[in-house]
Image 1 (cartoon, each protein chain N blue to C red):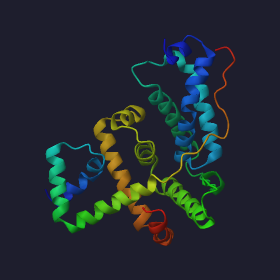
Image 2 (cartoon, chains in turn brown, blue):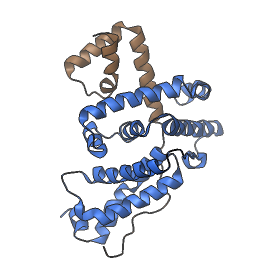
Image 3 (tube, each protein chain N blue to C red):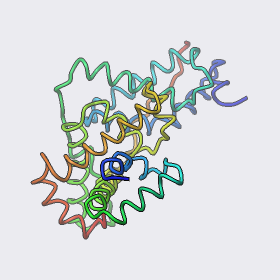
Image 4 (spheres, rainbow over the protein chains, first blue to last red):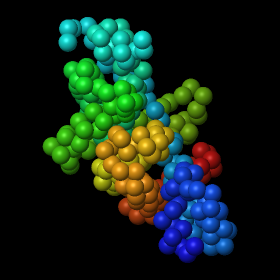
Length: 69
Length: 193
């Protein structure tokens, strides 16, 4: 697996959506390639930042339906 | 008989219960798509009104959340086409103060919330924003995302990949660099990113 192929699979690799064989190939590439390892690390970090977005409570109740349909 | 079936038969308390289970999700989804609490408020209200009117057309093969999400996203797309350039980010709506937080952490958390929303609104095309919000904030499966967005599984994977790459580049490397650099060096330690 070369760098282009590995990078194209980072997103599915992160989600565990690849089959065992391809997952293993990406892991082996990451173990051997410092540049891809760094890029994957940055991707994981940015997605971790995204997970910091707080889920807010609703400002009001939207769903009191009493009228006839 | 489940809640959906009872609601479809006109039972109002079942309908209210069913909608109540999803209102927090729909409000947050629309807030993350628009970056504007007032627009999210309107879109959430419109989503439930439309769902109420169209409940008879709901097919149980689709999940109820999937169906509601599709309504919300379609309303967002309609509005986005009408007002594509209007953005209004409000820090007050994005902060989550906690009495356990010291002031420094509160400020950093507020900045982080603002920065994430800013990146989503200003630097990602709507279709990438949609897929990223659904997957990486709401943890929805690829299959359900495909159903919500009306995409093939292949398109969902490709768009998610591109959206993540773009978000990473924008957040860390490109247009938000000055903000993010300053911000990340503080947050690395405190928020243990």
